[in-house]
Image 1 (cartoon, helix red, strand yellow):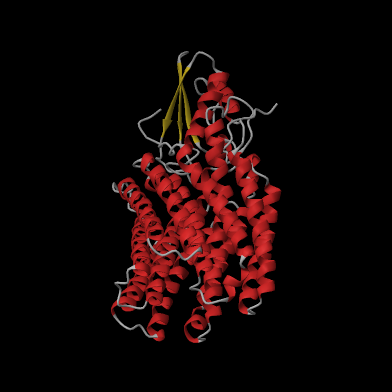
Image 2 (cartoon, chains in turn red, green):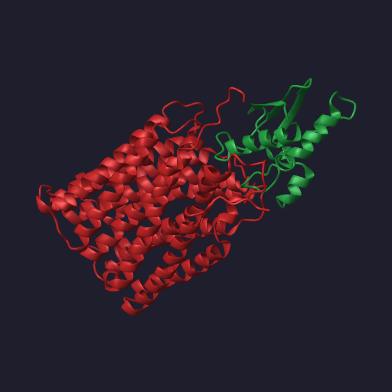
Length: 422
Length: 108
């Protein structure tokens, strides 16, 4: 082999627990949604919804995305992951933290259980931040994608720190500001800082890679970075230090929306200039998830001016279940089978007849997952907007069915045994 | 990679190329020859073979599987020879390096 180092993926025993845990928590949160569909038709600050949202944000979204990010950091930074042990530390702390937090929120037990959960999640975010910072610290080639990865890791740490302070504040009040106002800042630091910036960075690398597409409009990503961060920073500063009126909040949302538009235009350009014309079902699911964030942004004026809590809940539903969940459902089977395949077959390639990564999961189940996702999301949004618990309950059945199919397919990949084809 | 019949080791190079048709990129489902990942195959007497090749993306997660595949396929086709893989990103792989067959397989 020449002196070019192609890098080693982190050990799969480090990455796979993120996927297994995330798939299980998704199933569990859908079960809880079915157990208490009424939580979605009340004000968003209710114990069960807080538990479900934290399970969705941390146990599901962050769990899977953090696992995938550890796998993809070497691809994006073009060097090995700084420390695989720290990645495992992230998983242990995040898993323990979400167990504490979900139990504490569901039963509204403010105090050391909730605070302890918050501390564990902060430690997990800190371990991830260190790994990201040191893996990307040597810039072989400047890449705005890498800047997104770094900033998202910073925002995750920031969001979890604010979350911890809010958990302490619930028991030992020290913030002079209204808790609900701070909750809004915490949630949006997570959404527009952690999730949006990581997804922007990673998708800008992966979508062209999967489609064999290219775009020379990298400037769009730079604008996306500036606009997304400017909107978020102004929103946080104004929200904390000043009395932010709805109009200014709307302006900040427009800035972030402009950043999202730049990112989506970049992806569209790569899509237009792709070699691989036929998009597979996973890519279709990925593109559909982008509709989730677009709809959520279009709902912002209603959230700000309609003075009806239903708009906030449907806005959150489109972000968590439409966008983040849709994206994970699509991308899981673009990453997980390859990780498992590498473990079993990378040394057998060219030597024996072996299955391909696509043979490790059921493509039929992924097709059903796609269809059920659309039905579940439409029903959920309709149920919340119509304030109809029965429709939300039907939607919850669809979500649980979807989560079951997804969990089964993930387990099929994880439990794959090495097979040689005859 | 085009093999000219007049060049030294032309038969061996064709045999190597045939062997590498069996090495498939696990993501794209196209073999490494039609993807244009193989830049050169050099035979050094009876002892060693040096393959100059690239990957579609630097630090491609499937990179090790693909280079292992090239090594394995050539070890089977040429037992006893040392296989050297010279990985390069100069020039960087691009779509123009796909063969007609590769384009057809990708539905271009």
